[in-house]
Image: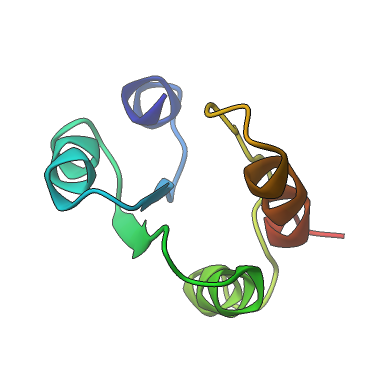
Amino acid sequence: ACAMAATAGASAVIAVEKDAARGEWARQFGATAVLDGALDAATLRDQVRALTAGRGADVVLELTGMPEAIESGFELLRF
């Protein structure tokens, strides 16, 4: 997903990952920032807003299928 977003021209690709090795892979595949997936939703939202000049994410791709990750993903979106 990071590689596709970067190739498509995304100016920022923010990955959220609990595993450090997978986070490094995300960077190698185009993530401009990797956030700790173990953080609570409010902290992740604040970090995404800090990385996007307060706007939030234009697009969120949630690939785990975990209900809490889906809910958290909505919090990261720009409204």
